[in-house]
Length: 349
Image 1: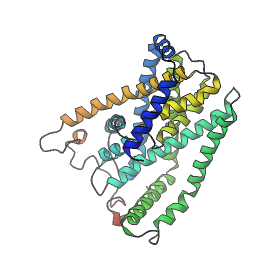
Image 2: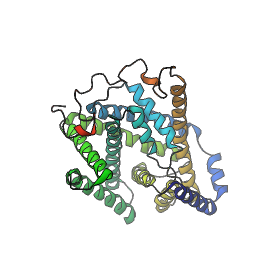
Image 3: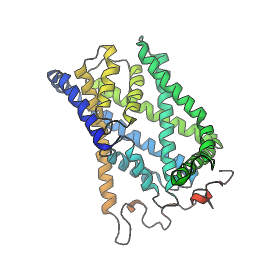
Image 4: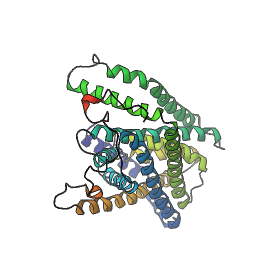
């Protein structure tokens, strides 16, 4: 879906909710909002991004990237900043990968590290939602539980079929031309990356724990926003609708999930008797938490852009003075160095 159509979808959805919403009730909700709880949500969300940066650092290291945690944090916040303006809520992931290493021979590995970082988080997000449906004290509407388990089942089937699909795409006979070649390179790269983590169960366990902490904190952020508005919604139910709404915003049908986020929250909170005005207020304040954190990324971006020296390329301010762009200690003869070498990896990584 192109950008103009996404823009129209977002505008249409927001206009629909604007027309159907009681703005007087929204005004009362904001007037009675507890700003301390909302501020706590912002602080927790900022802390969550640091933990996410640590997870990304751990996942990128086996692929040969040796950067410091402050650098990963900087790249993560810059990616969040660009998410405000790019068409999808994963557009900032592309920016993160380019900041990690934009050299042609390493670009694919950088993108793969970001993809696996996102992939790990989404799997844990679904697992969290499934667990919440089991332990939620209130009786859930059937469609809520079904939507969670169907989504999780689809993800599980996709994960189980991933090795088969990777081997199929990796065959020379899969597709001809430039597109086929790029798809084979991507499939082989993904297969190699996964094999690195399979050989390192300690890394897999550590990053999974970090993902669980991140996703639980993201749920807690929205719970704090809800409490700031005085909403009486069980905390366990937040662990259901927050993951589902987050997944909805990843569908590329709107600009940065705008309109979809509001519709999803209204849909999932309606069975609990939450008014549309309160649901829209929650969605808006949740987006404001993200916006504040993203603007912090804008400050990091500007500091990085203006801190480069005259001999340096833009956006390399965090690694200046390092002749190999922070890659000292990377694997010798890495499989990521060129497309031609995608078939070979070092064992024992």
